[in-house]
Image 1 (cartoon, one colour):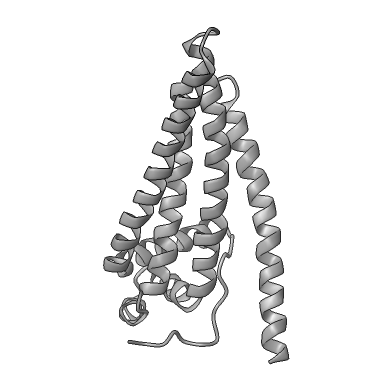
Image 2 (spheres, rainbow, N blue to C red; image 1 turned 60 degrees about the horizontal axis):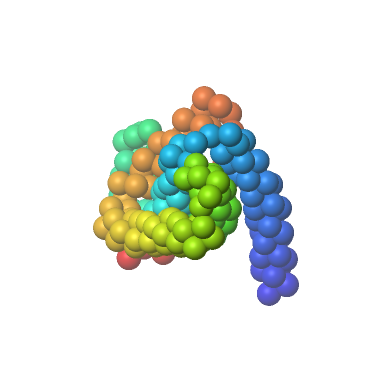
Amino acid sequence: MKNSFSKTLKWSTSIAVITLVLAAIFTVVSSFFLNGVSWAIGMGIVFLIVLNGVIFDIIGVASTAANEVPFHAMASERVTGAKHAILITRNADRVANFCNDVIGDISGIVSGTASAAVVAELTVSIGNNTSSNLEYIVAIIFTSVVAAITVGGKALGKSYAINHSTFIIFQVGRLLYFIEEKLRIKLLSPAKKEKKRR
């Protein structure tokens, strides 16, 4: 029990530090790209941030829905990415936590901040004589659209992730294989316990 709590505490602390670093990076990068750009380009950047959150949400859901059995057959045939796909399913809780909570929440926060910057730029471009009411309406519309796309995209993504979890995790496994083999960066370590088969 104590050992389990210690591991949980260690993981929670690690993920908190990772979140802190990634949030800072996301904020700096988005602020850099939004600085001095037109509101139209700014909108595009906001939607890219939202899309990023949706994609990682799909990966997180797929990792918990995927069954590792098909990947064993692929691994026995030495299919590239199969072993990494097995690692993803065996570490599904951590993968889901990172993708859904860390990246997902950061994307939501950063997209909100970026939306405010875009609204400010849009109201300026409309004209200096813009009434406060118009500025308020523009802010509501754009923020509502971003929220609708975020929630709708994640809802659609969850359905796709559940129904195509094997395909999604296999593609992510191939990407991890490339990162590990070509860039020498190891993102997942082997799990001791096999994920329960269905």
